[in-house]
Image (tube, rainbow, N blue to C red; front, side):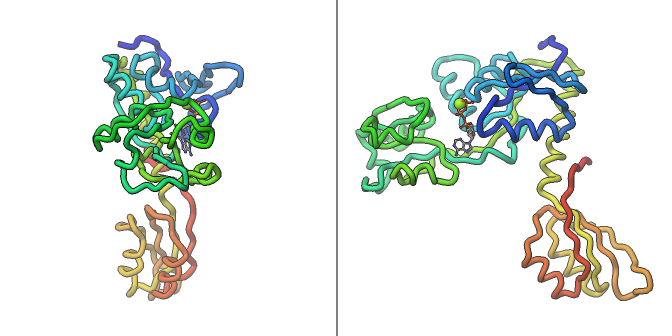
Length: 299
Ligand code: ATP
Ligand code: MG
């Protein structure tokens, strides 16, 4: 049982996930005063402490029960899990949910001039990576033997510097690979940020706070994925119009003053409305179409 009264959440101190992680917690109503020089930040309005650390340290802190929750990339989580499994360290955690940021993929990339056909082309070559366990799992399953080159940073320059024949690194747009004369040849893992919880049993009030944060996160993400739509529709086209709005099966339909042939429709739709949908709506006779962002959703 974790007795510490305050909920401890680990997030990346500075890097690709830090801004979005902070934004998500702020969206859940957790207020913080961050002092850049300090590792820990206390929330002013909830019993929550934020630990700002390197992303590589987050899975271990959660699995060892040092913190209660962590926000990190699934790539880092999976790598640490494989590492701990191979060394017999504790590696349990609860994955509370995947988040809607930090999208990337872990890929093998080779110099442009290399002739890649399939993973057997890598036989006997040296591959530089910060993710030795994920790379090993992939190539072992393909029965390809290769040589390791563990690099914690600047992996993309390894082939050009003569340190390795190819790399296995994170990619999002592919611009870094291109700038270094590399071509993505194999995607070995797709990742997003996620929130995980320590396996250590929590006191009831702390677990209740975790459940509340998770429910608010669900609300923040659902709100981002949804739009509030207002429009006027010809009554005889109502069914076809509603069918164009995904997730809006039960819209509010209200009468219009002095107009018995048309109604006002208020609906929450789960997809961004694209221009072509709006055009289809107007073709069906809809007018006064308003599409508005939603800030929060609950229930
Ligand atoms: P730290 O100093 O915390 O160890 P880092 O350099 O290891 O930072 P970042 O580059 O900030 O980490 O990336 C953090 C996470 O962001 C990655 O583990 C991954 O989940 C995600 N990510 C999303 N897109 C990319 C990308 N193009 N390259 C690298 N990471 C990405
Ligand atoms: Mg890191």
